[in-house]
Image (cartoon, rainbow, N blue to C red; front, side, top):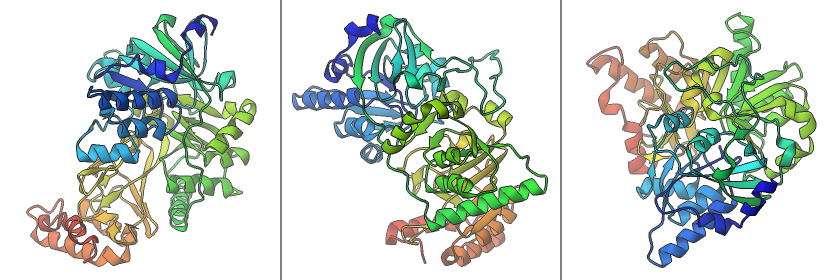
Length: 496
């Protein structure tokens, strides 16, 4: 750190290094490990310039979503012209849907690859939150891996937010390996969640580091909330089904679990932790959520592999206090590895992801409301759904107090096609779609997953399709395809 001490500066001084229309990459993945101080200063710089009639906006890349002090403040200051590959911020979402910010909704496992191979513009400046840096340019990341290696490889200028909250205790938590580019790429040398393939730091030339900003800021993660009754019911069905498949010899014990972000995913992990007979499990996932800590405390967690450690401030403190004994249970990877199709297939993953809506033929929409309004993005769900050993898509059967049915005749936007989905689960029931024709899928989805308020009309639409559709392979009545969505837009409810 001594040779870099002359580069220590204020967030405002670091922000002055970033120019209008630059492509800026930041560390961070799903509210973890992102810079907090420099983006805030950059937002204030943008506001000051705008008041003077001077344009200022950047293209912003990350691993996934970042917190309010990054995504939110920059969007509020009109300092972002383009964003990729994922977000979950209300202000940013509003501007994307207004059309004032261009949004590149990318598969999270492919973002870094596209930058490294040149199909996406590379960042010229990157802002990385680090737990420690060495004199010779070794960067030890904080609570996320994300796309940091890809960004640091390509960027000319590096700004470090050095977070003292983590410090040298975090050394050893990361595996910064990223795959070769094609052609002739070597296999990724991972077989199990606990395997490591690379170093625990990123080596860069020290002269690339232009500024070091000292920080002690928390990741802005909301506290863990206990799952509600609907989430618990969905979780119980998933675990019962997995247990049944294992007993029947259709599924091997010891497969790793991937859980998406949200209440239902947390409910699955919570149910595992509360089950006295639950054998220890491994996670091979993107986001290691707070619900994994009860698994750890009850000796039911072998290892959690992911690209982000997403904990509330209280849990962040607890993790740091116990890091010497807990660290061996965690591996934080670059998202090119955590979301790699090759590794997901080899490890053998039971995948659980959230859907906004599913249709009766097995397609899933996980990103757009009524087909046009962005919610968050496709994220990494497709990386796992297509390549999982067993894949679940989960959703409550209704939303907005019953005004919206999560089971519709045809999804208004397709993120995951019928070819990539296996099992749908709502609080109403579970539909195993494997080995079924389109008509068979429709019947089991309607019967098992649709809410009773919508079940009869869905059956009527299917029957009409069987009678009138030009082809019977997908018996869809085109006039009814978006009937639910149109009714909602006109009346505020999908109910007839």
